[in-house]
Length: 118
Image 1: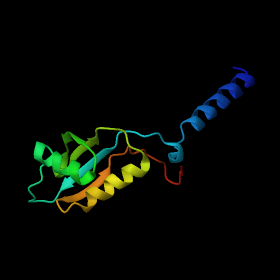
Image 2 (image 1 turned 45 degrees about the horizontal axis):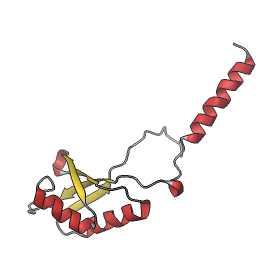
Image 3 (image 1 turned 90 degrees about the vertical axis):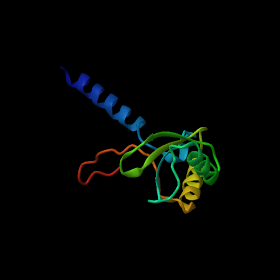
């Protein structure tokens, strides 16, 4: 393979990598996936209709229960797309609910080699 072709494929792969970078300032509204852990012993059951209704009221937006996770956690999602500011507000409202022990956005985790930064 000639050096010209190798250079072409190298430039093409670098361009592809650059287009995949995450720039949250230009992020489009998206469905917010939320992991919620109720306080142990609380009457809150996010899998039940009454539980998801209570969490929707706390969040200020309609939520859906997707599935139960290990350790008593539940995966929820907003019914409508929300922007970054609205997502932060929803998480803050849910964290303020006394029946919620832990809440966080369900985000894809990516492996990074030691010393690698993004």
